[in-house]
Length: 230
Image 1 (tube, rainbow, N blue to C red):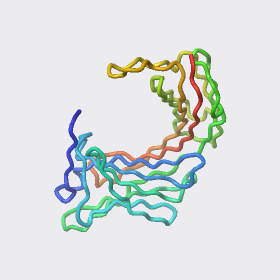
Image 2: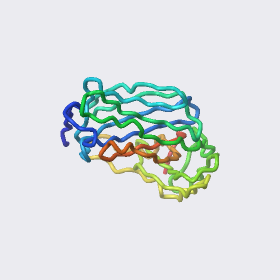
Image 3: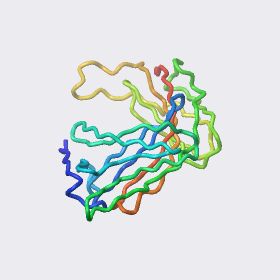
Image 4: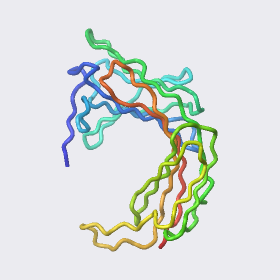
């Protein structure tokens, strides 16, 4: 395991940072969550910890929230929640600095993508991994990419990208497969388990040019759990 390193923001210029900004909305839940991880350059294991008057805020529909920092296993992440989730609303994340010689990056933004909602399979249903699985969802018209993904205690994680504009997918029999027993597992992998199936749509936005790179995106998702058996 590679150790994580944290560097204080007051030791860095803004263009030495590359943020990963994720805005997420979920069917049936009000509002949207915002998370920001600031990397030093393109290092996946070196993170920025805000110091002094350096702040991250998120704004949408005249609401502004200050993102609060949390650290878990060396990863520093800044989080907050906005009340908005309608398609087309713009979320703007601002990195504000007041120290002389330190440039702010006030305008990383993304417009929220269109919502969707799963209609099949039904929650609590039972499905054979050997048979085709019909997946369907309702959706507004959108040009953004949709992905279907699945995970469970007895199956390998997997995903399938779907053509923009589609509202259904037939997952061929054998696409979801039983996972192999891990080296350190004492109990055999069961033949049947609950599988979480998620359909999500994502849209990329624009990172403030004051940063040295990075990404911002919005994802709208819906999930259902069903029993998977051979």
